[in-house]
Image: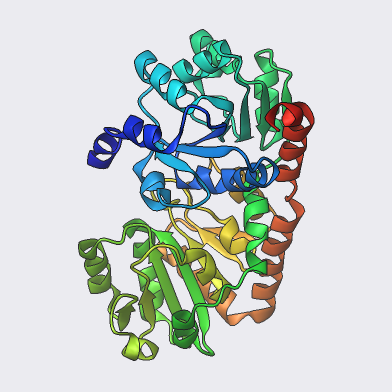
Length: 391
């Protein structure tokens, strides 16, 4: 909350410094880190196609801004000022965007209505709608009016299309999720991490990404009981020392921190990466991946970053809002567990049965490859309808 409040105090000063009145700009809004990753293929696409434009990126959440505030992809990266008419007018005066692109969700009515009033086109990309949202309720007329500000909706699935159609919208394209495009290119990069290579060596490896304490609790019994030559790499969502110390004290097996002297890393069964920026590449070392967030109520983290490397995925049981996880489970490339017994059972099966592990991993990899293409659809629309105006 402190970051949320303090980070917004100097937004307008930052924008004045980085955006001149004569600059041409394109504005992207992302709620948090996950939405930034979804928006990144489009951001990179417009930077390449319209190099004379400055890119302004706003975040609502500190968990997105604090990680990406210095990312070179944006010319100005700031918190989104709270949605008051005064803030909106000042923000739009300073940014004066030629186009606004919102990623997935977050519909701020004052921003949307003022953008519409100024005839600034607004696109929603990788949109995802659910029937319990206010737009689809009898009392949601004000928010439905705000939705009318969008020039076009690029949504992830046909359910979102049906919901929007039910309240009178027709400017919809089912383009899919741009995250598939983002992660599909990861395997083409150099994913080498020498510290992970020396830790894993010839052992099987389980990479546990973006875990919370409730995720770790269901994994600890298997780590303690397994006699196999298996290494575990944890990249926790929270990396403060007290939280990590509490986790290590419960492990009961030798562990090492990334930040420690790594000379004894090969003698440890668990490596805890207490730093950010490594997780995507760590998945390249995985034989099995456990993705955190769905064992509690914090929200499932990105399963596609692991799936693109062709590895089986294990998650918790609270993932109703994540269609990509539901679909991969239906295809048998993902396994949901609700307790430590279930986690131990599927981990044991995946680690002891190589054929089963390879088959399920292949399903994950094919799933990602089959869902790419959203970025191309969206970029074609931008260039076709707005290319002449944005040159």
